[in-house]
Amino acid sequence: MSSSQFGALHSETGAHGSLGHGYGHSQDRYLLRFESLFHAGRGLSFPCDERGQVMLDLLSEQARGNYLFARAVVGHEYATPVVQRSDE
Image 1 (cartoon, rainbow, N blue to C red):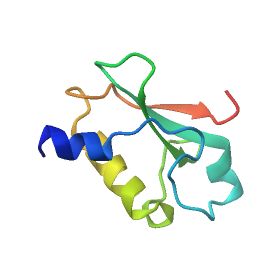
Image 2 (image 1 turned 120 degrees about the horizontal axis):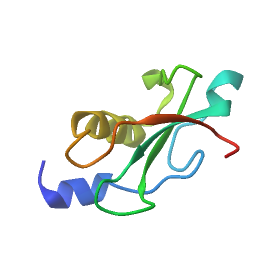
Image 3 (image 1 turned 90 degrees about the vertical axis):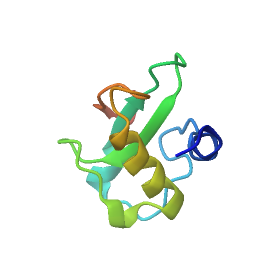
Image 4 (image 1 turned 60 degrees about the vertical axis):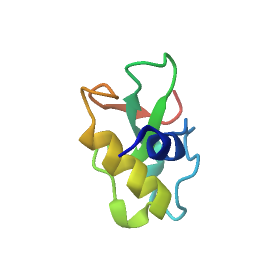
């Protein structure tokens, strides 16, 4: 993936940012957060359950692509993800 493609995928998201709608109650309470290794305070967040399981079928196409990319570059672009309560 080129840096321009990465730039198009990389966006800081809030609790629900560019994610799809229709998450169940458990999915609304937790976020799986991938922190950027190079840009302090930036990263990607995805609704998940308390174990960090992300329901891929409920993500928008763009969010699903961002999630899969972030997972693939853990240790290179993003730190190991952490589960956070969404109200933090």
